[in-house]
Amino acid sequence: MQMLDVELNDEYAGFLAARRVCVMRLIAEACARSGRDASEVRALAVSKTVEPEATLLAYRAGWRAFAENRPQELVRKTDFAAAQPVMAGVRFDLIGNLQKDKINQVIGRAALIHSVSSEDLARAISKKCEAKGACVKALLEVNVSGEESKSGFSPDEVREAAERLCALPGIELRGLMTMAPRGDLDVARRTFNGLRELACDLRGRTGLALPELSCGMSDDFRVAVEEGATIVRLGRVAFDPGYALA
Image 1 (cartoon, rainbow, N blue to C red):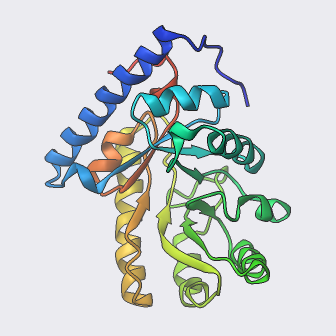
Image 2 (image 1 turned 90 degrees about the horizontal axis):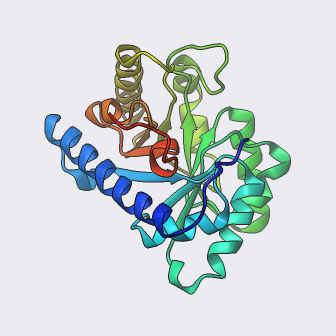
């Protein structure tokens, strides 16, 4: 994971604030196009490529919710945030692959785990939570596009396992997550639409509200919002001055 080479100075702080204003405007415009309210969408600043000090600047710029790919980075960033009185109430999610031997690092730190990618992993999380007397909020990762390079349940697998997953103690299922293939917004739209339709199906099967749809990243978040995303995961567009936002 390559870290951004940025100087943490007033100029960068100004960039973070201006970029956030732009991103939130684009989210609001996408919501308006689809008849939604902008308050329905949470934007996560994906801080995996910046040092902890950059999250403090981002917090001062208005970001209140962050996300990390790796449990060890989640630990590092949450420890840093806990030592900053100004960051009281900040939220960190885990959005990357979670290995079973890292589950304990995540419990109590991640506000939401986006990447429960198999029934086996869900059962392992449930077991760890039971042992700790804890409960985690989680999303089921679904490979809607069917790409071999992506992890997650297939739509058919998640339908088949849904009722068993809902019965697991220690996990509160909040919805679904997916990633779209890069470089084609039409394919991305179909992927996000498929996630929304799958969530509707699962609500009928399980009786759960499943309110959260985590989809959309820097290149395709506007399309994701138009297709029903409630959480968008923004890394380069939030933190990288070299990322051109059209």
